[in-house]
Amino acid sequence: MHEKLVDLEPPRVRLANTPTRGHWLRFAESQQLGAKIWIKRDDHTGSELMGNKVRKLEYLMAEAVANEATHVLTCGGEQSNHARATAFAAAQLGMRSVLILRCDDPARPPAATGNILLDRLVGAEIQWITRPAWRDRNRLLAEAAERVRAAGGRPYIIPEGGSNALGSWGYVRAAHELAQDLEGIAAPDHPVTIVYACGSGGTGAGLVLGAKLLNFAARGIRVAGIAVCDDRAYFVESIGRICADFEERWQLPVHVTPADIDILDAHVGIGYAKSRPEELATIGAVCRSDGIVLDPVYTGKAFHGVVTELRADRTRFGSAVAFLHTGGLYGLFGMPNPPW
Ligand SMILES: Cc1ncc(COP(=O)(O)O)c(C=O)c1O
Image 1 (cartoon, rainbow, N blue to C red):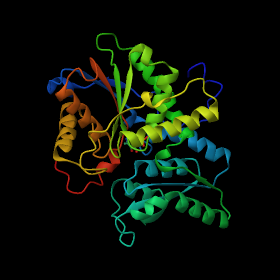
Image 2: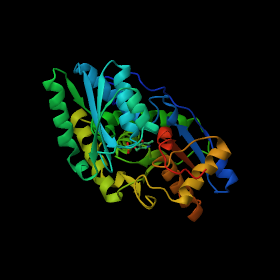
Image 3: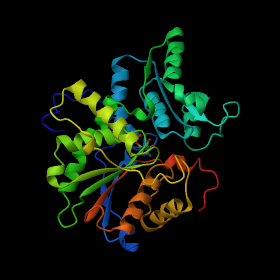
């Protein structure tokens, strides 16, 4: 951890298998993209607890443990990777979980596939809500917490995606890991752009803060998020807010400005969790060339964005890209009508 942070870092419970490894993808050469792609395997942070959410949960669950919580509450989409990871982290630490999940019709909840199957297997209490009710998710979480309290329990609420200042520590730490990873790769292949899928902004906030603290800009390293929902303005605002909370809470010696938040928003496609055939074709091609599974909602969409950008301009990200694989495997098993 950076010398400015060692004394500031909040308590953490070890949940993730880190450091994660990285390697070059054959895909970039086989598709003649003109730039190399190195992939950091944050999909290998665990099995039940795989992906980026685990790094955030190390800090969030440490706070839940310190608060002597009996129940951890969170929310997400019906196939939320974050909700599933939270439910498993809770079970591993001896707590119960309550998940508020949105779907088309709560009277007819979706089938137990993918993450939902795991949520049920681990005994999470699931409260299904409509898409319009999602607007009130924070109030619904507070009400669910009140019910836990009324029954004699101690609730701990984790916001959507684990994306708050505390959760962002996970990717501040990961930025340190990335700095070491990249130092180990000699020029001219040294990746100059780190690319990640941006969904609720917590991963982005941690990486932006880490990049600022470690002065990635001076080393010529850019950090770019590919939005899988919403747009650039939305993420500049939401990531900026998380960074500001972080700076205030831990009195950081750096200040993140909107210019530090680099978001590409041309690859959302037909909307959150909706796939176009070309995105699914890229997922298939990467799996066949390298034996790596990307998910349709986050990593597949972001990776397809990288490919699209490189096809338009192979110098777009410099000589090489470091793609952060943030997990999402189980979402694939919830996919209706997969094309492969
Ligand atoms: C697999 C996967 N990748 C990326 C993301 C995006 O991360 P964040 O919500 O921190 O922006 C998520 C969750 O939203 C995810 O589940």
